[in-house]
Image (cartoon, rainbow, N blue to C red; front, side, top):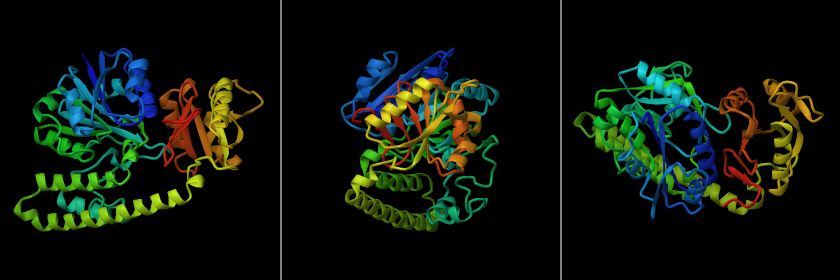
Length: 416
């Protein structure tokens, strides 16, 4: 077996479906087994996997034991030479697995591999490459100095902002959203630490992989979309508490020695301060959302111009989806994905999308997944990343749209 893919899912049925479609496309020609561990989702995720992806090795839990514990359930039976821990709110390119396997075979010292991750708006996620959060590095991040000096090798060492994000480099920390592991590294490092419920397990595991004698790498030659944080949206205030609790666990576990005591104390103060501030912000956002729920729920307000990147059939189905969902978009037209498509509603080819967005004052772009490769969508999203447009991806059957933000799924029928 070449590869074992492990996806832990919690109440992200629509994202999980598109993730698995992309995984199966990327696994063509590769001996691959795919695990989904469902942590007691209430949205029909497990039933969807059974129906649409019978080849998947499905593990269902009757409670939510956390991300680390669920991954360990599959790690115990995974048989691949390589193992990928993958978040369900991701879409991967068609050559992702071949590219990662080739990289690992060319770098025998590698234990873990991370890739270039972009969010649902085409922007680079800084956690694609990170340094070890030593007490000083963590302190600069927690106090906001890293944000004030994003290119500093001292203050923003955590996100390695001083390095070119288009160049391959060693990176201490690999994101748990996409962590490509060599079996030998897993055998020497062991299982994930189950004290980390939702966050921090990737930081801990990456550090332990290095301590086991391996190097970790950031490889931008492979790209994925990571919508980020979809499972945690179901938890309301809990993600804040889990994140800072994970930071405290990591610092206590690895940096409790005498020379670190002062910095550890300062970090704990920063953790408590940041946690309180984050919780206050969440409470205020929730209160505002409840007060103005009717307005805040609409990701497509009236008057915002939208283009649909699709063939003619997909265009019609997406317009129908928006209508059925009660969205009153101002549809500016269609952007063609193949040359020679010059129907009346076509504004131009996808290669000219940035110019179309600028000229037509477009605020929403919807990509049809049915006739586009993930790599084409990622290329186009990255080209738009400097603009103020929101981007959405329509499922292959145009039954729903996926995006980023408070309301990240739009369905033809009511979403669960």
